[in-house]
Structures are given as structure tokens and as C-alpha cells.
Image (cartoon, rainbow, N blue to C red):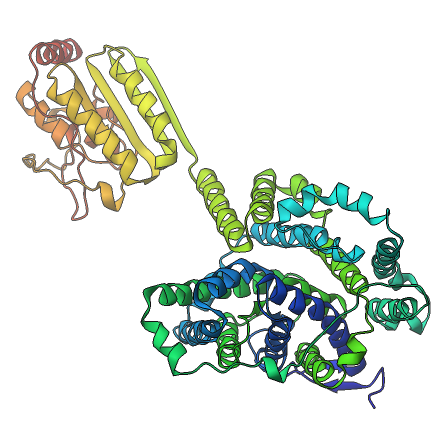
Length: 601
């Protein structure tokens, strides 16, 4: 007999652990897992015992592995529709082979270390996933809480809830069942406030004990759990089932089971890791563990299994610290189903539904939505979208949509682009800074159209302040430049940033080497013919070329300003030139020569 305060090392964590807490936590998980195992199996169109077998495997096989410490696995509601479709299309005998092959594929994915890719998930998506699981769980369990059957999908359950409440209290027996369930929910919230050592007993156990007593009273007829022969429900796949793997539809089902089961398990791992401060999940090891569990489930002809948030959160909330609690929960499922089915038949279903309603509320976490709104409204939108899509569709679809929304939000925030266009004299200028991505392409196109329709003889596109220029924006800008230059009516200057995709090294004629004398007389006076070469020899400098050209005495100590106009006298091996526009144009050339003569006097 373990003492309640006896400290031992367990679960491979190397920390002192209260074994009494681990055992009571395992009983809480057992009480949460039992109705889920049965409910998922029935909803999938299979015998209830197959769901219990998968729950046992999730505890005894996956529970002892090192992938995750507190995550609990078993048959999950997220696979219910897929299992039902598979059973209808291929038969229940074929289900075992499909689950078996899915498990082997999961092991292979874990061995090639693809599990870690699921760590890249936004906090808002994780919290939205938890809320999206908690809300449907509460409404779906509100029906068995009153000994009624849920209509079906999450939306149907929510829409049918008002009528369900009216029907519940119009019948004495369903009202008693509902009161038992409501009492369980209330007890779960207030039990921690009970003084003394009594509160160390899990509220779920207390609620089950009260429910059994009430159900035993004369005149009380509430529904209780019914479990058949567990061993008789085991169906080992034979050669005929393995031969069915030649069917492309069966192989498609195998692949679908693998992807969905893996995604749900590892997304759940990310969510569970946020519930506690213990050891983090080893994603590749957890994926291998899930594969091993599904392989065993397939051999036994049972339902596929994944990690389940409801059981995992109950495990964390019950104070578990090691793998012992989740392993023991599988042992309790096996022992009670094999040895004590009569004891299970005493537990009212409404009480177990009340335990799940409380778990659903904890998963929903209503206080997280206003908190996220205050912290980051963009992340609040991602969180709300994730929750809404999960409620409307399914877990995997909701998480994928949430991830997509998070990526779009990140892209919008990273694509901070400043696009400014104005007319200065005879030049229409466009200056762009920041990250120019396809998300800002409409803004870039509008600015290009504005400078293109300005009617000036010159256009200058200054992109020197751009830190990232993606293919879409770059192609649009280059297409604009080519069209304008082909018109032979405007001179276009394009200054590109020093990015790997934007390097240009057009040929140029080298200037005569300058003397060491920097006096005005020692600098050669460029001729009109040589000035066209100076445009093509323009190197990227801290100061952009301007008109009129700088005088020699304005040359800085590094020669940047002077060289920016006349070209470098001694370019280094890494010097880069940006092509502006070297072709002479009639009318524009005469205008340039006139301005040059005016400047030289």
C-alpha cells in the first residue's frame, strides 16, 4: 500500500513524485477515458469494446514510452467520421489492417525525424485548438448528461441545445440524470476549496460515488455503463484482409489515417506542453510511440488511436507528474472491463458526462480570449478563426486553417513596405523601402502607374532602401522599366538594392586613371559624349546621383559624392554598377547638353 505522501522517483524524470497523486490522477483519467472510449466506438459504427481495447493500448503501450510525459492516448473523436466511412466502405475486418499499416508508417516517419516539424505552431493556434475542442465537447456531453443522444455534429449539438433543455426537465428520470450531471460539474469546480485532506480525493471519484448511491435508490432509473466481453471482440486480421492492401482505396485510407492521426497527436502534444512545466515532448519519439500503439491496435482489430486533449488535460489537472498515471489508467481500463464489468454497470452515464463537461470548460478557457485581445489583436483573430473552423468542421481542418491564418498574419507583419512617389522638376521619383513582397504588389503597381502617368521626361525608381525584393515585385518593376524605355519618350533610372537577386554588372569603358592631385585643374572635364558613359558607370554609393553634378571641391574624403556622378576612378574587385539608361534620346540629349553648358558657364 502506497502512502499518500510517500516520495519516490518514477517515470524516469529523476524528480521526487507523490505516488498517491499519480494513482489518484490515473483513476481520474480512467473515469474520463471510459465514456470517451465507448462513445467514440459507438459513433464510429463499431462495438463499444473495440474502443476500450484502443484505450488499454494507449495506456499500456504508448503510456510507457518516453515521447511525452503527461499526454494520454486512446480512440479520439477526431477520427470518428473517418473510421465510420472506412468501416462502411471496406468492412470492420479491414479496419485492423488499415490501422496496422498506418502504425508502421508512423514509426517510419518518426525514425526519419519528421516529428519535430509539428513544433512550429503558433500559440494562438494552440489555444484556438484547445477552445475548439472544449466547446463542442461541452455541448456534445450535455446530451448524455441528461440520458439523451446527441444529434450529431458540433453545430447540430449547439443548435439543438435549447430544445434539449426543455425536453430534459419535462421528464422526471431525465431530470434526475441531469441533476446528477450538473452536481458533478459544480463539484468539480468547488472541490478544491474544500478544507483539509479531503480535497486530495479527486472530485470525479466523489461524484462517481454519489452517482452510484443515487442510482441505487428505489424509483431512480438512470442509464449506466454497459460493457460486453472484451476478449470476444478481438479480431486478428488474416491473409484475406492483407490481400486487400492491393486496393488503391485501401492504400488511400492508410495514408489518410497516418496523416490525421500523426497531426492530431503532435498538435495535441504542443497543446499539452503548454499546460505544465514538466519535461517537454520528444516529438520524434512520440510519433514512434503512437505508431507502435496503432500497430498493436491493428493487430487486435481495434480502433485507431491518437493523443487526446480531454484525457491529457484531466491528467495534468489531477496533478500527475510522470508517465505512471497514464500507464495505470490503461491498467484500470483493462482490469475493470475484464474482471469487474458489473462494477462499471453501476456508474451513471450522466456523472461521467459531467466530468467531461468540466474538462471541456477547462479546455475552452473563456478568459483566454479577452486576454489575447489585449495582448495582440492579430493573434486574437488567428485564435478565433482556429476555434470557429474546428467547431464547424473538424480538428485537423481547423488547425490547418489556423496555421494558414498565422502564416498570413506573419507575412503581413513582415511585409512592411514604404512606397512614396512624387514629382521634382522634370523627374517623377518613386522611393521604396522595407520588405517588398507580393502582398504589397497592388500598392507598388499603383505607385508605378502614378510615376508613369506624370508626363515627366525622367523617371527615377530608387529601391536602394529595400531589404527584401521578392520575384513578384521585381518582375513588375522590371516590366515597367522595359515598357517605358521601349517607348523612347522617357529616361528611366533604376537603382536596385545590393541583393543577391538584383546584382547587375553591365559592361562599361574604364575611365582614365586620375592623378593623385585632387585640385580642380587635375580632374578631367567630361565631354557630352563621356557623360552617357558616366550614367552606365554609376556605382552604388551612399549618396545617389543628382543634378547638377557636384563640383570637385565638394568631393568627400572617400570620393563618394564625386564618384557617384562621374564614376569610380579606381573601382575595387567587389564594385558593382547599376544599369540606369545609357541610350541617347532626341530632345532629351539636347536638353542635357544645354543644362551642362549652363552649369559649366
